[in-house]
Image: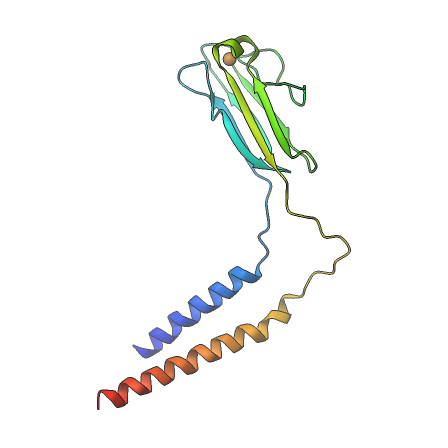
Length: 161
Ligand SMILES: [Cu+2]
């Protein structure tokens, strides 16, 4: 029983420590914007992404032809089509807000907005910190946890007679 407790404490400890140390590798994401069942709305019509991410306008077999055109021409899926598969990647430095419309249905409210948030800062010429450097603090924490658990266990044993 005690061993189980110690083990679970260790798992929690190491898991928590690793979670803090591991840099959150931000993999570029692709967000799909389609057309909803009313045929006159993007779905979702508003998305928030990060620099480096891609927005993919994707629909097929639509009752009406649609396109997606950014107000300042940042992207343009071309002529309205019932089948569209058009992607635009928001590169680093593209943070901002982008309004887009479906040209034939803009007046019907078929509009959307993409918010691009700045990506994590790029640190250049900074040598990567070796993971091994963090090991002592990890084992120190684990050792402390084991000692505390053993101490608590011994206290309980004495208390119970
Ligand atoms: Cu449309």
